[in-house]
Length: 90
Image (tube, rainbow, N blue to C red; front, side):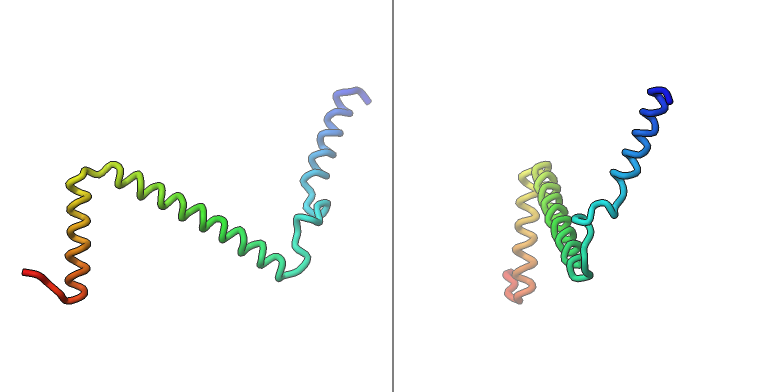
């Protein structure tokens, strides 16, 4: 067996045993409750990341708007709030 063949076989075996999920018992959940808690933690983490990205996108959007547009939106929000309460000014 020459060195090239030995190297190929070594890499093949290394790839097989390192990617095997059963060789890593710490990564798999032992019960359904543990698996559900792990999934819930991952969902919560993804939710936080999504919320952070949404805030950043909104901040970027408003940084692109003109001062007049920002004032107009602010006035419209106040007007709609007053209309909702029922105290409409003439």
